[in-house]
Length: 158
Image (tube, helix red, strand yellow):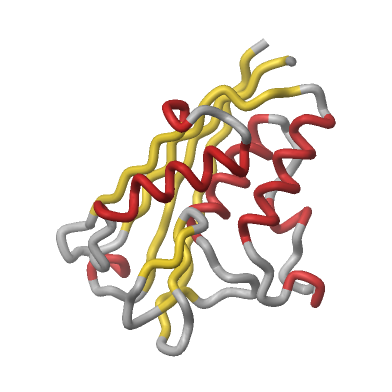
């Protein structure tokens, strides 16, 4: 049986924070604000995977009210989500992540992002898609107030 999940997340851009996207540190004047490292792309991917397996969402498993997740590395959260998926008897087929940001330009980082995600979720890099787009200066992303991400994941019975 095949199952599909989708996820979405958004975080505000602020000064004095690192910018992590798909587990890759992206040099930028601002970073994303959040309880963890605020990797908006990994958070969207976690929700897509959890949704596909009907396991709730990232906030249920890693609540921002729990001090254990303060400053947490989202790559570790993703690896825990992968373990939950596998415990329920599923394997990950492919994932597709879209990052929506006016800046920085992400084209040069996408190969590293794909490799990082593929390694964490233990699938071939050809089964990992990462895309970036702008909003043509519209909305909060266009005003450079924040970054959003959406993700889709396909899982199947192992």
